[in-house]
Amino acid sequence: QVQLVESGGGLVQPGGSLRLSCAPSGSVISPNAMGWYRQAPGKQRELVATATIGGSTNYADSVKGRFTISRDNAKNTVYLQMNSLKPEDTAAYYCNLRRWGIPAYNYWGQGTQVTVSS
Image (tube, rainbow, N blue to C red; front, side):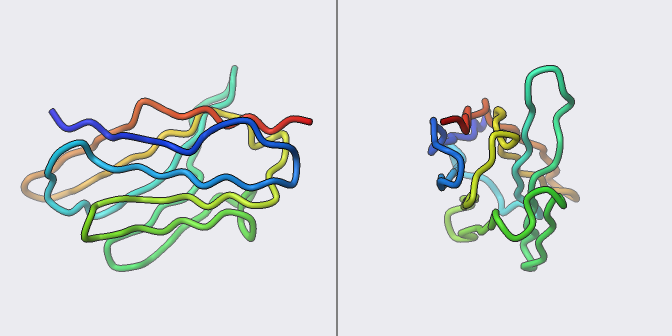
């Protein structure tokens, strides 16, 4: 079973930056889409950003202009550069790798905590 290994979370002051990364623990066929989601206490998991193998990206309105998603297709690794962080960005961040067709898969990471606080 493939596991996604996330890193880069932590505690940062408002206005600061963090960079998250996520890579599969083993070999996978290239995903069609890679993305980041987040879940704050008492709230539903929500999309933060996604990137397709074709280069298309999609962002939640709340992070546009502050967060940038990127992917290394050779390593099947996805990154999330987070700038100008706000307290409302505090959440557990989960990466996702998804492939449709044959073989199809939908892998989730275990989550990495991001806390924005002074």
